[in-house]
Length: 235
Image 1 (cartoon, rainbow, N blue to C red):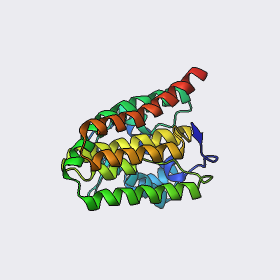
Image 2: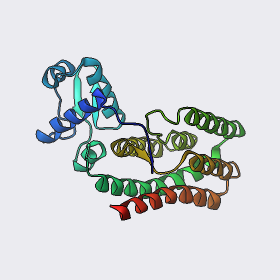
Image 3: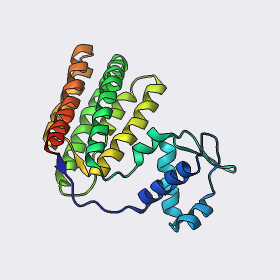
Image 4: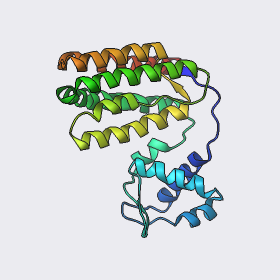
């Protein structure tokens, strides 16, 4: 796996961990109310801006719901939710969790991409090519900068299909994927390999070929799983 530059402590990520611990320690369930922003600031001694950023992240991944004028509520919470964000120093555990996420991505992305291929326009196909090229150039220029690539490319494709449930599921999966890679501070595939695979996926979608879409998605994600297996055998 490719290592990014030295990981920095980001305060809003600390706030995320504290809020999740608060929920877990108090046995809070969906619908239960959390302390106010001001109370969280005082409790954790973390700036209000960092608390807000943490809450925004948790809301985008369906852990909390913010009702303006009412308060902050638990949206959905269980032990599996906690594992998405928990900063676990056990790399072996995290690598296995990434492998589990790969399996989920193969299932979801194969079907969703096939659905997107039925509806996508030539203009949207061109937009995919342009977005991928810009991201590729950006990543090459910032090769030594910190930050882990997410799966925004895949999420853009899924936005072209019409099922909002698939879109929301993939949004949640994107958050899980990013959080795991942030923990180990590395990515499975080199930039050149990711770029080549993404182009193959776009081509299969443009041709509306379900079999080639499935093959391109599976091939791309299997490389990630294989890279993780290689790492695990070294542990």
